[in-house]
Image (tube, rainbow, N blue to C red; front, top):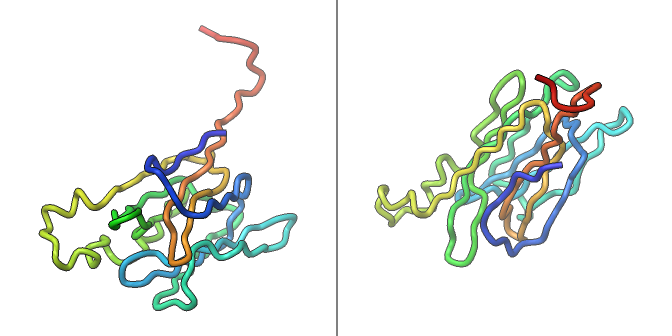
Length: 170
């Protein structure tokens, strides 16, 4: 199992959904500056099970719902951006790709609203982008969150096993 995730030091509360790869829906709440929370609807033993809400915020100024064509549609790639705050980072944009289509980006645009007083050219030093491409090998999410939002998100990737292979072939 491989973990593809944040390369920066995180301080939030960890969450882990390893092995939960059968997703039927994703719910995403965002405010002006960041993604407030994310919640997943997993299929387990033929039943839809809702995950805990990851992140924070009592309410939502913007709630988006992604509905996959389960079971034939699955996640192949996730990308997005973190904004550097004074003391930590926050997830401010996320896009999901499947074997059928693209969903997003979700969040406050290009995360630029956070920088009302900063020169646009300086913004690159305040944003960290990520791109996790896993093909058909997605095996769940993990990350960290705080009381007011999502700090980081990553993916598990399960390498494909080679069938009937006893050693190197030439």
